[in-house]
Image (cartoon, rainbow, N blue to C red; front, side, top):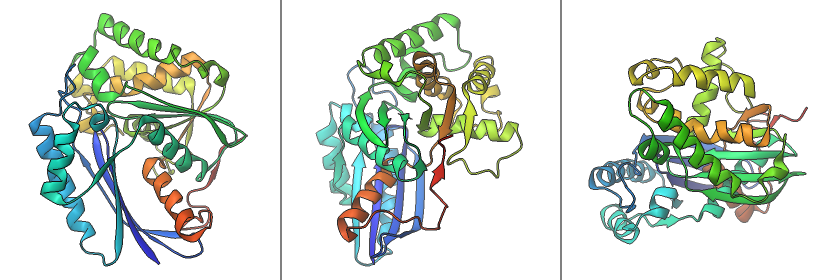
Length: 324
């Protein structure tokens, strides 16, 4: 049995999963940790990671490292995504993390990030044809899946934090700023040459903002005990929830059931790629995924170590049939 820790340093949050891998390809999650670090805050057009955000991130990573030290004979893979990928002071930040904590952070390309999202989704949701969207703090990844195979994978530099900072008011969102933001997102989507091929494909979505949409839906229906992984809503319901959020100021957004207070200032921007994509490909169904980069990395590691495909930790616990 092998222990494997995965650290995923995103633009908005840092997450870690520690798992034990068994010879038959099954695994057990031993520990999960998450911290909201907002690493991409205030990077500005120069794309510079700022000291308060760096300090917050270092503190979170120190907590992760302390948890890892409790386990003997454990392998660690630590990856960073869009904020670090885009940062002009990337080298200095990576050196600081190594100096302070001893962690070697690997900066994923946008395409690598998208591919791990694909591995996480395809191994836990029984879906053949879909368009996957992962909205993070500073980027969004899109993966076009046909007959379970990934045909196209791309990352675009639009996410919850940078959309909010570049275009939207912190309190009450105005129509001119909303229009400018949607125009910028639409331009990014229209620059993807293969995206029209996904016309009317169902969407699988992940990332904190997108999952928040599912949590709001479950709370409104009083079914919050229903697992979010594999949970589905219609595009009409999604548009309705978004419209309701748009009509609220910051304090009102923070009181929406299912919406974490610390996400209230970026939820309008965070849901914008999904709202734009729903219209762009004319999708009518959304399925939420709890599996993404960390699960994709874990499943790749399981195959490398055991030569086996992934076996759910509890039969049926993760694999969900979403095809009609």
